[in-house]
Figure 1 (cartoon, rainbow, N blue to C red):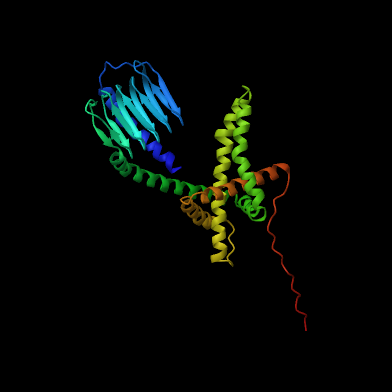
Figure 2: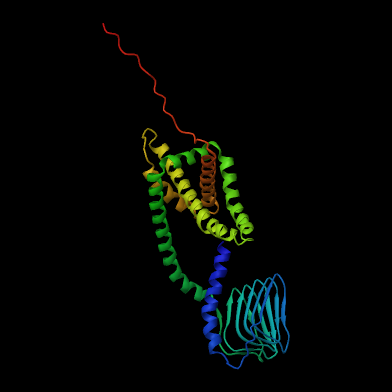
Length: 312
């Protein structure tokens, strides 16, 4: 996940930088709409050939013709007698030779650039680490505010669920305790099955609206409910150990404590996801059993009768 976010950030920065550079570059350079993408393989643009965009990951980009934008990730680039507007290299050495012309910038991340005296670079050769560091100071506060907003929204949703469906929430909690493997299994199936079902429904025109409702309505709502149930269950587990003698009719306090703890737990890889799967599975399993007519187990309090004192 972190690698994907880093790659997204790199491409975002590259697009913000490369677009103005390309617009300011030599307008005589042609555009033919050709895009070349190679993953875990090589790509070659021979002399006299042209491509607007070349993307290579895990391979070698050999350029002797014209390319507007060249992006290489976890590979290498060899340019000889080429004409390129913009180059972005991520963990990829770049070799420029044979009178290669770079009309714009050569942007790198953990990469080296080798040139000879015949190479002309119209822009600059620069490391994007500094640009990413500057962008981080903008993204970090936004991410923090989003995290706080999501936490507040989760707590509000948990309070509403605790007030409106406390009996159902506690029934789902009991499923997680009494049938943990079944609950987790249903949660995993519940993540995969709707996608397969939506694909099958999308084959027909009649099924497409149902597939849309399933993917963008029922499935997300069930997932949100499962997340909230998992948080409330964590809160009740904590309260049972801190104040075991206190009986609470509705789990309001558990919703606040548990969902805040779950938000913190999501920082640890897989921990928050597994907890959410348990809650999601419990919601799906409980819903299935209710629709089937099964009554959820309830907690009963046994009252022991006491004999009345005999009148003397």
